Length: 280
Image (cartoon, rainbow, N blue to C red; front, side, top):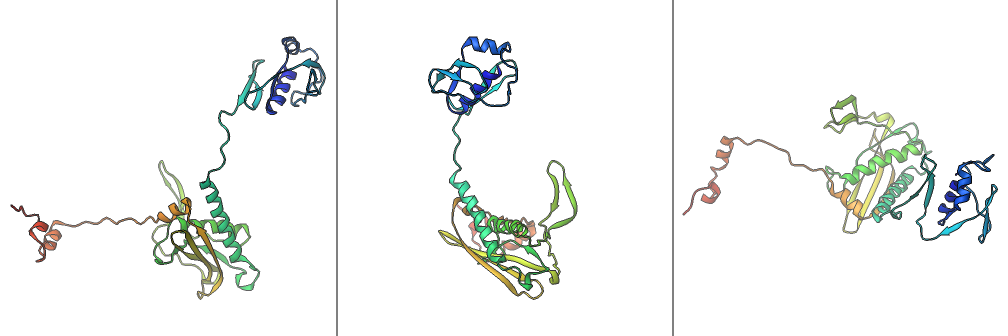
């Protein structure tokens, strides 16, 4: 069966499935002419018409069957063959996937701008601390977009051999049942950086209807001097739109006691409706 299997495999991968006569198949099953045959080698069929000569020896007439889906023939482990096909055609990447890759390449371009000519003295012997990029109109607000730029620049700087320092480490690994193990933290804290050996990597972004404008800078921690700058324009796509919308701004809960409510409702400008009086 090895010659038949390899013949089927070679032809099926070429898009045409061929089968051999039952007599040849029976001879193969009983091992006739099998000496020295390499079962790991796919066979090539010579002669497109009439008797087909198998490269590794033997001559037989093969029947061509058209219209079968492209696939692979493998052994079923019981002296049989299985023809495995792809039920559905491979789908091309979606436009959203292309937009995501384009965003990654844009940030790579931003890193190139920031590190162009990095051999200059001001960038030697220091480590970068990437921070979230913030809304140009509100420095207290970032988004998934701003945080992603910082995370991606961790990678881009490291790939270029520029030291990058992870400053969000906890004192130890925190384990939470059914959740996992955590070493990074964004808890409310101010992290002091050693001015002598660090530079801040951050920037701003601004979005209009069709574009996102990004400005990045490398800032010396010791005196705030801007060492390098970079800027890009991103198109507003489905990917960037969703990332910009995710600001994670949440309302904080609080408690209002009954006495406080009574005090608030003593204002003279509240009407009977505001006070909840039953009006007829």
